[in-house]
Length: 76
Image (cartoon, rainbow, N blue to C red; front, side):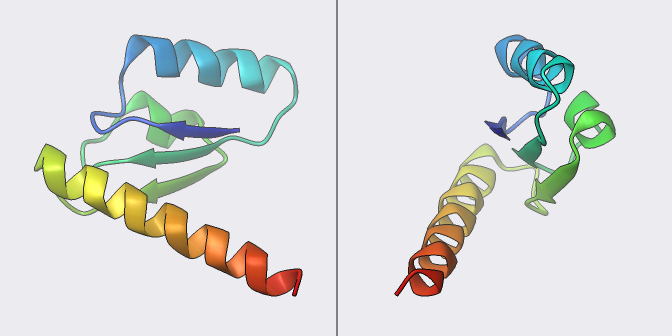
């Protein structure tokens, strides 16, 4: 599962992470710099090194596009 939260502590995202972990899913978390629940519980955490909400969200979009490109290139 991929979980996105700029703050890293959005209640609905935290609940989703907990459910995913109970189901045995691997959880990849996209978050900002704050030390959060997501960083402690996700299997992989992609942290955007900013506390500015807009920069964190832009970083999440960029990383998402890079991941999609890697996957597309793998299947060409």
